Amino acid sequence: MLKLTARQEQILNLIKDAIQNTGFPPTRAEIATELGFRSTNAAEEHLQALARKGVIEIAPGTSRGIRLLDSALSNIKGKFSSGAQLALPHPALMQLSLPLVGRVAAGSPILAQEHIDTSYQVDPALFSAIPDYLLKVRGMSMRDAGILDGDLLAVKKSSEAKNGQIVIARMGDDVTVKRYKKSGNMIELLAENPDYPNIKITEQDEDFSLEGLAVGLVRAWT
Image 1 (cartoon, helix red, strand yellow):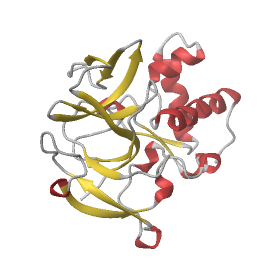
Image 2: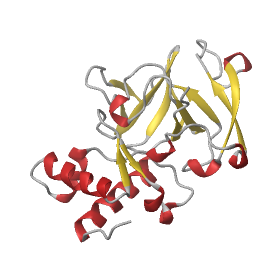
Image 3: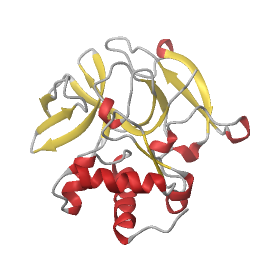
């Protein structure tokens, strides 16, 4: 790995912190705001420099498509990064058996047996916390977070979340993946795709419940 400038180190640390705190890398706009850049172009130039130096990989077409490479992961070993968007690991690393949840039937528990399509053996070091199951993503509402239709989202069961975390929420008869934001007793479930609406609810809404937190992502290439 080539030596990084002080600014590049700062941006790399910002990416690592975002991944540790929310499970996903920051957008160019978030980097620009955090570091006081006048435009996202400056953030993009620094990201391209980091990519040329071999510490990140940039996925085109998504605002959060930043993947930390092995050379940048030494001090967050065991934490999830967008670098977890890999084919399922080599059998020698397979340690954790996770059920894969397909389409969820209305009104029944997300881990009900009829929802389980299969199980995968995965390396637990891919994730920021030990997940309880994999959920097959449907739709493109979280595209700009690098979560695409057909991806396998690693989920840790939880009924609580912090602002900025990506959550799995039940809304009446539907289960949705969104970014969580709470202010007072108002909750917003934020899409990461301008073509999809955000969802506003109150904490007391009986149709709403948190199912879990996204702690990683596996792209099951075929």
